[in-house]
Length: 90
Image 1: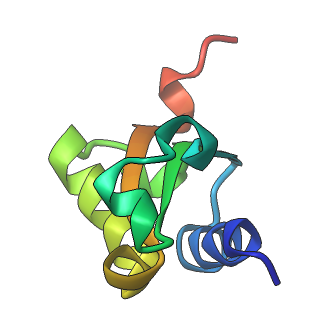
Image 2: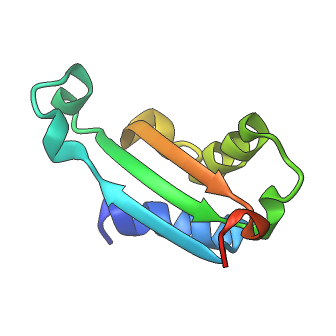
């Protein structure tokens, strides 16, 4: 299982999102201090019912909790866009 697949699996299992799009941005950060240790740079756009009524900080905490220890070992940077379903235009 790739690192991207592991991140997606953790987010999906924990938060059960309506939609989750993960992008590996590591190539754009070659030579960066975090890249030297092998940890990746990622962007996630996640839509989840659990985010309804929560502020941005609370939403980000839920995402960080979902990826857990990977933030210390395999993820150097995680750009998060966390939305509730009601925030998605119809």
